Length: 378
Ligand SMILES: *Cc1c(COP(=O)(O)O)cnc(C)c1O
Image (cartoon, rainbow, N blue to C red):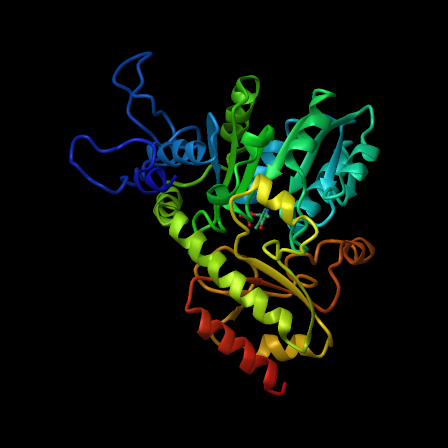
């Protein structure tokens, strides 16, 4: 994994010896003659820089086919189009708010139906299956409550009916988890997060090994026009080179900060999959190689929300995750603002919940910043 991350899929540039994959900033490609092609015709369909990235992500996720999109939502949009009006999908109830909006506000009107449930409870997944269920879509660990869903069991349940398991693997990245190895049919990513890793570009991925879906997925990428641009492909390739060392560092920092928060008198509860008393700790250990860099927590007092958000100075109050900088998010109004109140509350996203994407800075500096933010007045 470390080697593939650094070297990519192909040692690309034979002619010049360039070590960094060239950015083929070309919309179109010249044909050598009638009915002849270099393999590259038009960049919406295929571009050499993007191809290198697509091959690299396929290797990292242990898949056969990789597709790169302009954003994570672009990737998820292309996957949902595999289904037809009348199809039913079971979806993790606490997941990225944008996915909720896409499914519920756009696809519900095309005759798709969704059951939003706590997929970490496998008996609820089983109970939600209907004759028309065609897929289970999970985020594990979930966003922002850090619930862990059993990938193998979900795969078994849906495969019995010939449906698909789709896993959003953004939170752990392929460095810590490979859902395709556990029976997931498709993996999606917001490449914007850990894969690109520097809060400087947006990207999305679909990875799979299903020959029967390969042409449909490629045609959908080509036809919808949400394919990743050459420069953004290059930025993401560059980010991926350091994915392994960043993930290790994110996790080390997250572990220390989660433990520190847990002892803090203004904090009611901390959600971190790396705690041995996390309800699905054993499951995490069995299906992932690490716990990642995401930590959520409930404050005891709602008044501490503006206090923290105003007083942090090294840690940045911003939406998103997975970059080298530590970000503090208020899911209620940011990432999960699109989710209706009743559903948000039942998933646990209340007005005292904060989410930290722990970066790779010095651990002590991050803790000192939180500590002083808690002490200062508003
Ligand atoms: C950010 C995010 C998305 C959406 O990705 P974009 O690149 O912002 O379009 C999807 N899933 C998860 C888990 C995310 O965190």
